Length: 497
Image 1 (cartoon, rainbow, N blue to C red):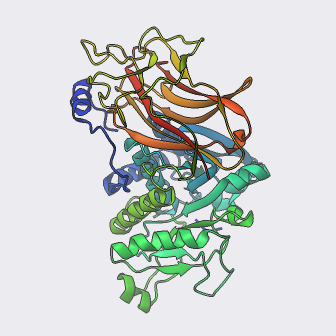
Image 2 (image 1 turned 90 degrees about the vertical axis):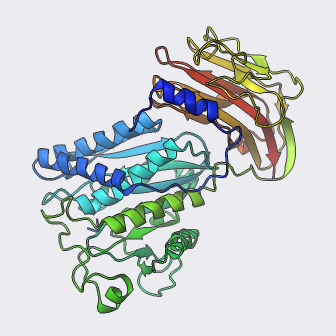
Image 3 (image 1 turned 45 degrees about the vertical axis):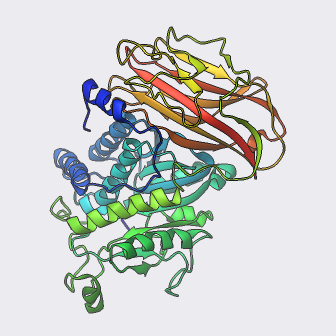
């Protein structure tokens, strides 16, 4: 800063049998502080085994990246390590995209993963890294499908001058930068003598560098609303360029975040506000004593929940209906409109069809609306895995749809269920076929966990296809060995606003 629990098949079958037919409105989950502390314990162990630190170019840093990446891969994220070079050493950023949401409206959540060479960096910035990681895993556990695309990042070499985040932003084209419509930065969220500071997006404090780019005030007010709800006062902290929001705001991207304090000393007035002592917020800042014992659990718990609240609120909720407007095309599947099976399907069973599905332990017998939906293997079988997708991919194509000009949004209901014998190679996708070009606009990957069938809603922007005649392709895949995969789609609608 500044310079799984895996359920057995029997348990899933019970959950599937009792799963609700319609998902309730999504609220931010409570983030268990014990889970966040478990990640910090792992980062401490990594540092201890690698010379006492997790610094840029040192083996402890790459081991930290590997730890985070393995958990995210297993949870269904699409991850990549972006390498860069600084001071003759290779550094890494870890970027993790949650499938789905409008990539032209991407919300990024980040924090740096490196420490200084002097110590393990458990508060700075293991705390922000671990909290962000657990929030990302909560997104996967709850199957959150917001309107905005979610992208998490763990930056390298922040301690050497924001090198990793700067390398990332500089690697983006102008169009790619424009697609990032908000960046949340969490750097030191568990200081042992904590304050509760929010980056001053609207410059209401009237000091320092001024407000952040347009949209930063909304981020600040969202975080402030959470702390107000739990009775904890907050104060502003300036965008002084000492953390990884720097290259984002320099490129006009709105930003915000939480900071619990570093080497500065808590004033008497701040002690009255938050408790603690008139000492440094973190007396072990950039020191060897920044270990697992250098964390205030209450601050870590509050701030982890605040991060989740901001992500869920700013991403606008996975069960929010698509924007209202003129309906361009719609199919509730109550009548046959001419969907056809894909010609290149490799699945040997469980192929997509329009049907009134049977209720089984692995698929819902109730459509999201009405009686019919698009479902893989509609008939019941003698076991949970009967008539599921087997042996490859299954697709079904809509009739041709002529899209008008304007702002276009695709809305739909969906579910993807699987056992813990699935992997991220299994998925549900929606694609747009325009001439010889096929573009994926929604992906839900499976993972090696049990996931019950429950209807959720999703949306995707189709404005890039305005004026074209297209077909929608719904695709499910069983690409893992002997995995159980069931999927369905209903209430497909394209609107113009």
